[in-house]
Length: 412
Ligand code: ARG
Image (cartoon, rainbow, N blue to C red; front, side):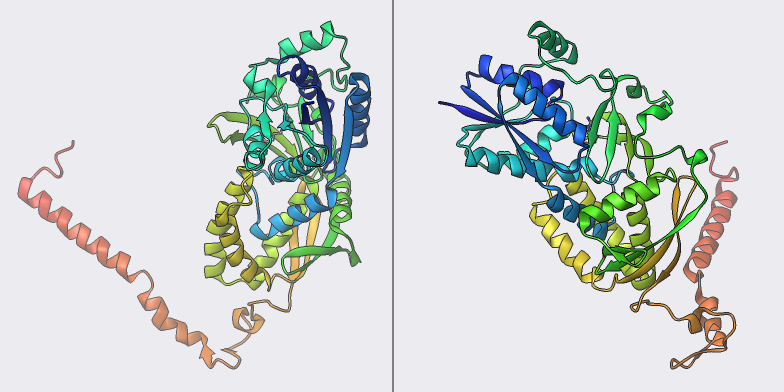
């Protein structure tokens, strides 16, 4: 008896995959696995109903805590890809691992996903699965299915297919972000209607400004407005709070791993508040050279996360540096939520690499350092010296050429 575990959402792709795994691939039994990374309740209801109707065993794995912890960890690397806080990308390895474990527990011979051959998710899932002894199956990609073909197949067999938004958009939701793509949104010039947004109110119509205080410990947010929250609750709370001010909408062109450019729309209120607050606190406690170097480290970390490769040795090495810096990222940031933005407006930390005394216009000397304003005179004299000298040399050479050929550089 051959069994296959399928990453199951109850959506069109995975619903069609159930039949195909039996008919085309010859499996005796399909086990549906739905991993909870914070999707809305309706998605689980839909998955359960569809699984029932199809007669497949279905397992739901709660990975919210693990996923939320990973999202908050990603803040330490100020993680974004081309401006997107990586919700879908960070969720995939968590989902893939949960499916693999469930597959093994239930004696499956293979694992399958319903991703197409055009997106990123096939790569992220398989990066985790290819390491196991189980067979990896991707029916949509391997059988080159189109959405139209799937619709027809489902209709012919009377399979239950999601109604929701009449299949207009393809939506991927988890705690960290909600992504909307496909249909009319594929035209980069098409201005999306308000109805694609569910987590954020229109920024123009949002309420008056609100201040929110985020407390960080070693680079991780632990409390909001003096109240401690666990990772899941903290993200949920901020999604609600900041979403009401229209915070965290991203409408962008995204370069996928295969090289395709796609138009993506995201909502991520909590991620935006936390990313802005975290970066602002780093600005207070890290030195200029640490901040400068860290932007490169952060970008490398984010790229690996986008690729679904957070287990790569490079990531561990980057985290060595990141964690070293985060031991000082402890303190509080006040963020103003207003008209679609989450702007840090105050920050404090016991690790502040900041001397009010030194920066102030009101003091004569830097205390304990024996440095006065006048000491900057020498620095000011040298500042830009090399450039001034080089410009003089260039001018002199230009004059020489002009004098010898009489016609400048001869281009005119
Ligand atoms: N392009 C994004 C990523 O690769 C998210 C895609 C989400 N999928 C969806 N059906 N909306 O991370």
